[in-house]
Length: 557
Ligand code: CAO
Image 1 (cartoon, rainbow, N blue to C red):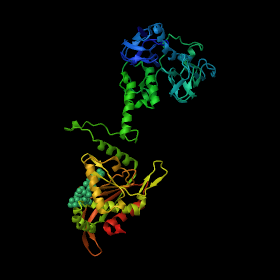
Image 2: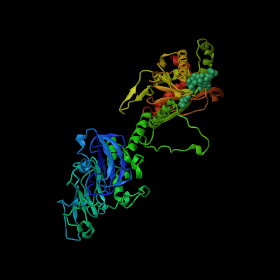
Image 3: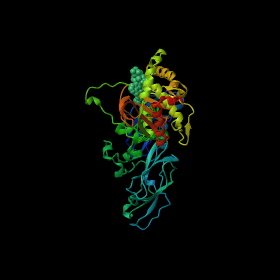
Image 4: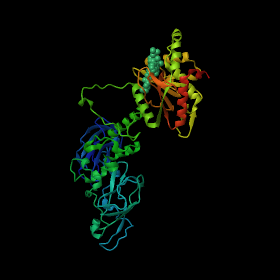
């Protein structure tokens, strides 16, 4: 065991860089090259990696500190004293290897594309990737300008990112962007051509003041770029040291003005997360790895619960409202059934183009018949309500008009036709809405259906339904007749394509050709998925249904 001191490595000439993230905690065990802290200078941010594996004993810096080369970052206890004793400060430099040097003046200097004309006239110069401090084949993560854009000297043209650092490649002089020859996702190395910038005149190119071959000494802090107005959002500026942070802001504006370090950006890209959607919690509104993880967790949770929000529908979410400001409230968790119903309803409402057709069935004779059978039904231990009749009539209609006994295939290319008739029955339970399914309704008699409907309703209310009891329906009946109402528009329970809403029976005056007579009229509402069913089919289905409910003898035919 040996104790080693880890210091800030060579920062490529930059001095007094900000510590923007501490990525380890005291007690953490790290592998060699694991990031310890992230620092950020004028134009680049970089991870400072552990020079050796070990356990972090202490951390001497905090977020927001400014550090320079040689400052102590942390103490680490290494496993094998002998092996790592030579590491110490020397090994604290690997980051330097990957940290791009801020040699903005190198851009274009070695380019052979220069088309220079006499002083004071326009000239076009190729811009190349500057010295990347040893890094090779770095990713182009943002193109900051377009052909035709006016840029000031030092304005970012593109942003590149290696393993441990990201940096702007600045315009070598003020002028107009003629072309950008790389695109996001390309890999570039030192010397690769990025594009062409045209000076507006000899006097406009500040670079002309410096000899072409002159490179800025590595020890000189890079010149700060004045950010373009378009990337400066007044409301989003970090509060501290605005002048110093101009280039920093530019660097952090990658991905819609988001403030994040290279490691976080890399992780975001790997996870496919748009950084601008992540709520930052770090200093100066910086997105941290924890923020990214929290965001991904939340998205996964939402997706698994089927919750509908931005991203799945494109519809803005409801604003969060504190109802207690209007009066006393209590907040309680939704039951699992309630949450599932909410998700299913939203999914069906948004996916299915609904049409609802209305009609009234004259069930005067049906009611007479039902009442005449009631006593006998009770002897058999069943309750004969209108529901078994509705089940039987709907099954007959599904057979007579099979356009309703289908489901749309998910591939959008096929229709599945069913040669069975299973019907779901909406049941109102204390825990929420449940839809048990009665199988082979077309093959069952009224008593059998009455018995099964009652048993299913009881099982639903007692929470005893099994998943299979709620699967496989071809069509659903939602009867609110015992509760009341003159009509409602039910939501199709996809992948079924139709649902019948039944409201409360009432006695209505009906013209029989000679006079108005009192008839018992049952309001029906048939909602259907207009992708699968046409209005004509729906009209025929409803007319057939009304006719068999009007004369149940037809069910025997
Ligand atoms: N009009 C007038 N009276 C009706 C009627 C109608 N359309 N439908 C049923 N009734 C009567 C019944 O005949 C019964 O009266 P009697 O006891 O005098 O015979 C009474 O209402 C109670 O019926 P019930 O509720 O016990 O049985 P049911 O077969 O009518 O209904 C069930 C069973 C499970 C469908 C029902 O209890 C239920 O839960 N309905 C709610 C469904 C629902 O929530 N739908 C909305 C889904 S979308 O949110």
